[in-house]
Image (spheres, one colour):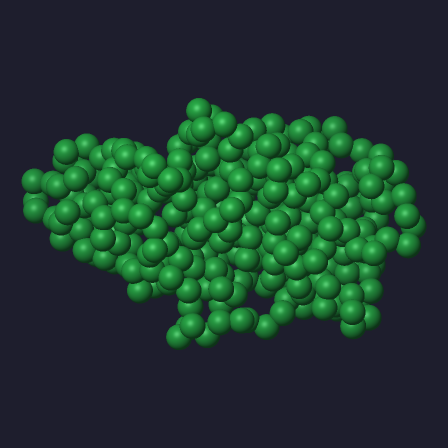
Length: 346
């Protein structure tokens, strides 16, 4: 039998992908208690809302892996803000408490001694000393380690997301499965969200409470009306441009206030996807930013994935954070399939 525990699990994107692949997820661990309902509702697994530094790996083994013949899998995606290319100052990174989360991951590996370990994060992490130390730690613990930068459209994610995926096994070399899609087969924005009902900015779809987004200001409505798919703010009339656009630094952020294209995968979905001014999050043809439902589908959450308990609990900010921080379900499934293929071949 094979089962997993997911640390830094959020609302369960990685866990649900593992489940779709055929791996039982017994528990998820995350400090954000607001993730508890969607995780437990969709995974039928325990949610442990606790600071990772206070989690005892030996206790997890006794509770969830008391069967000594069971293959233990420990997976996780540490919050990536400290490792992001947007966080440029090393001092800021070292002062950030999240910088130490990889060391807590190491501690749990040491205490649990799982047969399989997997981690997903931003590609920039692989350029950091702390990642080199993590890999060396795994090798000292007699794991075969493999890590690669993944372009998510190669695996059927309709999103130009690049991620670092690490796989480690005590049984031998473990590889990610071969890509499932060629560039001609990439899932486009239209494939993913093109059949959804039309909604206006600030409107809520009567049949889908999370098919909603923010209402744009009058000036932003004028801006998006002049925005072309994959275009820039250079397409706008001069009076619609922002003061920062006239600065040298502002000229480098051409995707801000951008409109997506129907014919390609979307840009990387962030926690601010519902805010038109934070990236290329303008709808391809409607004059608004993405809705929560659209972002969830672009993150490959199935349409029946339950994201809230009561309709009055729906919050753009909260669900934006949940969805933007999630591992795409499809990528989680690819990781799960890779693990199971490895276990079958040992």
